[in-house]
Length: 429
Image (cartoon, rainbow, N blue to C red; front, side, top):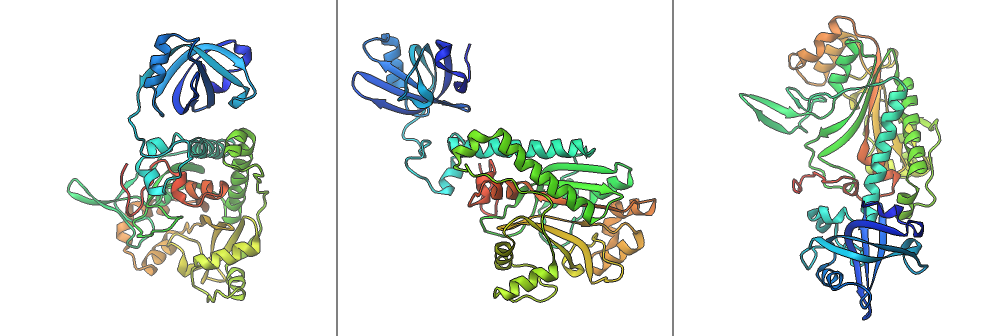
């Protein structure tokens, strides 16, 4: 019975394995194949005078990245990866790979990112790239575990919607039978409706779509958002949940992904400790201005401003008390300072990771705020109706999964943390 390569040890004495030919070397009387599966790499040693003609014929057929299976004796050796090798009694080529390969899976010959993404099925075979997604899996599992343990209900909201979540023009329209519809920018409106329904605490991990014509290393047009909404809560309550869930995700990655972190060269992986520092928006623009990035109240933080403030903070942190003019219509303003709202961003020193706020739960005020953003309340009737029949105060946030992984693993381009990224230029594969 086939076993994972990581479980092959000299104590096995015999083993059957299957995987891809990672590398091959012919030294005359000896041929070495490095066989790779998702758990590791095993050296298969073929002494040409001691194996059958069938094995020799199969070895000649086995080009790099061909899928093979082999069975034989396992021996200890210091010269092989993992300190063991397999000498095959049988070896079969299950699926032969064409040559030449579009890219080098062993990474001895580097490839440009576009080439890698065009041939993603090969790129994902690289142990380094594969490790990114094993870590992403562990991080998202940790997020779900944490929220489940804190009594959040997982929900799935529509991705085809009739109205914009946040206004503006960054929408992907689509023909929906005889109507116009859009791909959803966020589950925001539906999360709030569920607060009226009495769900109390909900979360969703799902796709969001933004038709923004960015062409940067940290923007995507289809991304994965981790969202929560929580009743009878203000912005401070959900900020506490956010910093704790991020710390927990880091902890789980550190505990369960040591091999993958080592493959990525992250031997000094640090877990951020909650609570995270907090500064107001006003303090952030003052820090930026002192560093030469001139901003006035009401300006959004530019990429350059985020960079200098991040350098000053040196760790994950919150920016609170944003100008109401910069935030969506559903954000709650301070009663005594209506020009400032109960919104926050959670920042990594490199970039923004999350935005959240306490929401406006008063129907009449919400209608005013929709109008104040130049939007038509009639387009949001489905959303506004629940606010007429008993809506509790509530707050929530959205956290970008790709940005979380990108900053966690110090990736240089957000596309490296997405299996099949979608940006303004790429809709395939």
